[in-house]
Length: 247
Image (cartoon, rainbow, N blue to C red; front, side, top):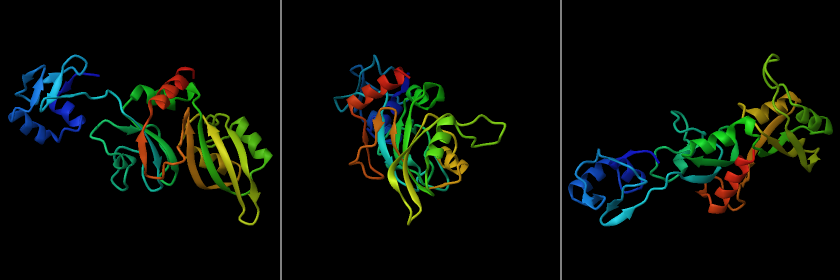
C-alpha cells in the first residue's frame, strides 16, 4: 500500500469524514506510533506505521473485493450525470473502488467491484483469455449455423476492423416457437462495446435479456438478488488469482 495522508487513511477505514477526523485529531483521539497526532496532513506508511483511534488499532486492507449482482438501470462507471452508478450500491468508505469492466445499463449480473487495478487488467485483457459467460434470451431461433458462426468469430464493426474473437454459443433450452425466443449461454474473452448484442445482430437476431453469470472462476451466487453484493470469500479470491495466473 502506498504512502497516505493520515486523514485519508482514517476516512478509508470508515472512522469518519475528513472534517470529522480533523476534529478527532484536535481532541487527541488519534495516535501514530503511540504518539498523539497533531496534523491530519502527515504522511503514513500503512505497512510500517501503527495508527490508533481511541486506543483501538486501525488496520486498513490494501484492496477490497466485492461481488455484485448488477440490476438493470445502473451504469457500470464511477460517475454518471444522468443515471445511478453501480458504486452507489456499495456501502464502503473507500473512494478508489471501481467496476471491473462494463455491463450495459440494461444488462444484469455478475460485476466485480474492487480497487485492485492489476487484477482488473488481467481479467479484462483479451490476451489473458479470461472467459465471461452470459445467459441470454434471444428473439429468433438460434441454430447450429449460429453456433458455428460464433466459433469462427463474427464481424461486429466496420469491415476493415478485426472480427470478434471466437465465442462459445450453447443452447440451454428448446426454442420457444410460440414466443419466438431462444435461451442460450454465450462465453466470450473480450469486452467490446455491446459485444454480445452485436454478435447476435450479426446473425440476424436480437437479445431481449442479458445477464452475466460467470467471470473467470467467479460464479454469480444464486442467492444474491439484483442490487445485492457481498465481499469475496477468501477461497473465491484465491481461486480467482489462480485462474488469472494461468491465463
